[in-house]
Structures are given as structure tokens and as C-alpha cells.
Length: 176
Image (tube, rainbow, N blue to C red):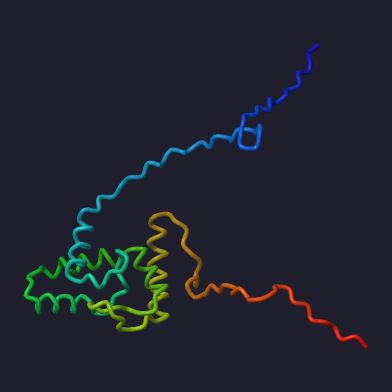
């Protein structure tokens, strides 16, 4: 007959701050996934050109929602400054900046469109937000990412304010 061998777990104790304690389990770090890095040299160069000429259009390193007709305004501004730049380069730089997920998210969440001076020019309409959401869904589908649900930008998060005084106030009941 086979003997029943009962397994006993050894409880190892090591000296710790509060006497003998069990050692912490080692967390196994997963290797970083191998991601193909995109060659962004040209895009960065375009972005540098836009930042160089119009730094007020950027906040925290990201482009703000721009006014409608900004490309013509940019070309007119360059002509007024006396800078010779191929209009196709400005158009391609602008399209590379505006066709990103981050830009579409900014259109969804921000209230205004901005001019070359970085000041608000116009309000972003609901129709423009719907269009930005459609573009965001397409971009995320290309990258096989799950898109956010429709209308998520409309909900306002409310936070409860802390009230002063006791939390549970009980009103005394009048006795007859």
C-alpha cells in the first residue's frame, strides 16, 4: 500500500520589526512588451516648426483646439513676418498635429477654439464634438483599442463637498 504523505507547508519566519514575521513574497516583474517604436523624426520636426512660429498655440507640449481657417491665418502671418515657407509644409505640419488622439480628446473636453495668439476665438459646438468623437473612434480602431462610450465627455463629475460640523446630525423629536 501507498503511504499517505501529508504535505506540510513550512512556515518560515524571519526577524522583522515586530519580532518574527513571514517574509514578503517576491513580485515577479513581467518583461516589458516589445513595441515597435515609430520613426517620429519628421513629425517632431513639423511640430518644432509650429512651436517655433506660434508657441501660444501649445499648452503643456500639446496643441490647443485651433480656430477654423487657421491654416490661412498661419500663412498670412508668415507673409506678414516676411518668412518664406512652403505652404504645403505648414499644411502637413498642421495635419500631423491635428490628426492625433490627443487633439481629438482636447476638442471633446475643452470649451474654446484658439487663435494664433493663444486666446479663445470661438466656442466648440456639439456638432464639432460629435465629429471629433467619430475621428477618435476611428483612430482607436486602427490601433485595436477599445473606444470610449458615446457621450462620455458630456457627463460632469461632481464631488461631494465636505460639510463643516458633525456628519450625522440627529434632530430631536418633540415629545408630547
